[in-house]
Amino acid sequence: MDSPEQLSASLAHGPRRIGVDTEFIRERTYWPKLALVQIALERDGQLEILLVDSLAPGINEALAAILADTTILKIMHSPSEDLVAFKHACDALPRPLFDTQLAASLTGVGGGMGYQKLVESITGVPLAKGETRSDWLRRPLSASQLEYAADDVRHLFELHDVLESMLQKQGRRDWLAADAERTLANADADGLERWPHLSLRGSQFLDPDAQRSAIRLLRWRDRYARETDRPRGWILDNELALLVAREQPTGTAALQDLLDGHPKAPRKLTDIIWNALRTPVDDEADAPDARLAEKRDKTRLRALQDAVAKLSVELDLPAGVLASRKHLESLLDHGEWPDALAGWRQEALEPALTPLLEGKH
Image (cartoon, rainbow, N blue to C red; front, side):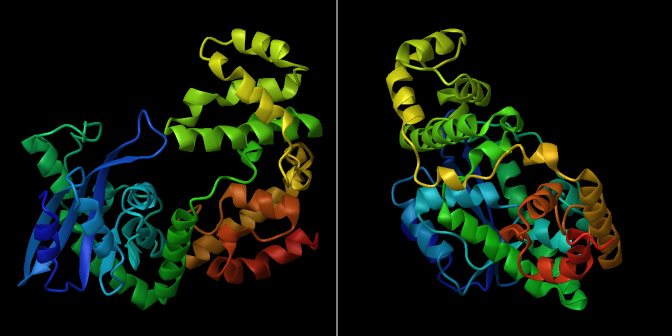
């Protein structure tokens, strides 16, 4: 389907829910290139699947109106990257959202299950995986591509019916809604990572001055990647960014020498990188010390993990759904509950974890 008018007319009957998926390419760009949007509809008791060509003029504007219509529930599976694609292409997000992967986790069906596995687990239907690495920007799309794309939404209503019923029985519908809204809020904010050095293990071996340099370089890299729509690693890879931060070059010539030692280094950007390296960012003095990982009380971390594992069993939740190791490390290092553990997770975890954090174990 490549007509905005036809797309709008197809949903004019006011469906209460639709299944949604996307196909996009993100190999040579920072932003995902939205190529196809699959929409499952119910009409007169029959399933109808629309394959929407998002490359067609006017289609993304029509899609934006559908995504923003809060009277229609959007059922998706693990939609984080799809949300980025929608935000960039349509400047809209699918609200309200029902994430079937998240629902499967919260009901105890399974944590982090892929769509094919979840469909087979609930419906018994095996799905083909043949077009996962396909070029979705080519036109015309092949018959096998179209069939694969349709399958990605064909069973979303069945998954929703089963998982919604389970959530209601377990009293966890509000859990899913809160988590889905957090996912949407993260996509809507579309912000740059404040402390990008913390996600790089090599930062643990940098002194405070070098960490500040790393923050400057990595924040510049992310902004530049967005502006030029190129993958971050194509601009400055992690290893080279940490090397430059650690070596603290004293001028552009010294920086050029460092870059010359790496075959994929962005030599043409030497002056820009130097400027980024020497320009403080407003909040760098507030940056968490990446070396905290070396000083972390591993015995207490293990106690936190054990408590989470025990509570997960009691709640019949898959491992990692309540709290990941990364979030427990943040809680232990900084003494503050991270946003990812806010709401129902903090309510469930606080009685068990607070005594451990206070050393009363």
